[in-house]
Image 1 (cartoon, rainbow, N blue to C red):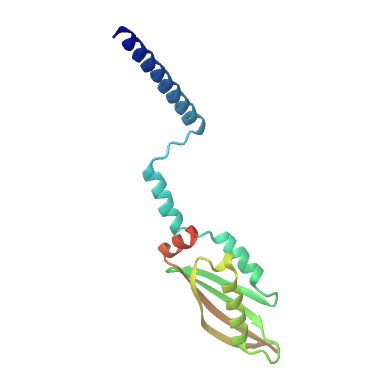
Image 2 (image 1 turned 90 degrees about the vertical axis):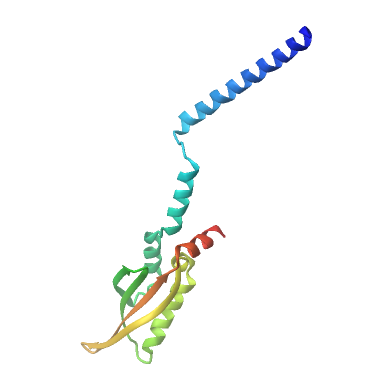
Length: 156
């Protein structure tokens, strides 16, 4: 019994020393990273990230997609809808709705711009003649996807 007791005692001491060593390593890692996130913190961040839209890259893409002959005159975000107003000079023989359709098509085909939107649609337009030049103003609306649909898209 003494030999068995001695052997078990030494095994217990080795395991206690190993546990102590692991606890020290854990404390060391915690102090280095200084990050102590709980499961609730991670879930909260995930929920927040699903609702967030990064607008700066979208606006940058919008500037790249806008033809040189067109100017964005107003951008407004209201009730989960991004309204974009623009003006362009109409060339002879070009139909107004072809200009709008082409612009909407460019926006929809660009994933960096369109990935958080559900749809883009034409709202209204007007045509003016300024100093002998035909100008065409229009407004389109880009509707945001619901946050649950954006989360699914980000995961895949």
